[in-house]
Amino acid sequence: MMNFSFLMTMMSLFMIFCGLWGFISYHKHLLNSLLSLEFMMLGIFWLLSLQMVNVGSEVYFSLFFLTLVVCEGALGLSLLILIVRSHGNDYFKSFNVLEC
Image (cartoon, rainbow, N blue to C red):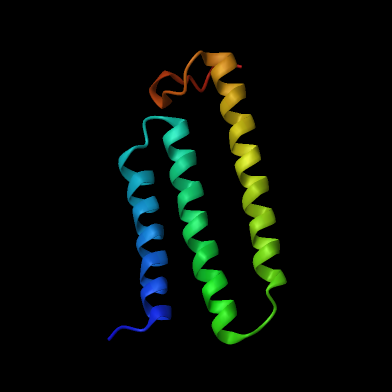
């Protein structure tokens, strides 16, 4: 019979790889890229929390990681709003490098 910790570790690795697959395959929209990055960060946070519980060390490190993930999400959403207001959509193919 499988151990519960092993099953949760495999589930978090599956979440990370699904987020990576979504980031690679649905790269035409900025919103899809941001959502897949957040899904990967959720999987990494889950894996980090499981490993911290198994080792028995400081749990505050996972809270620090979660704070950084929230800051990354807020920065991504603000960039998405800025790009949609300036270009009208979030398609990567409509971005022009020469525009200011």
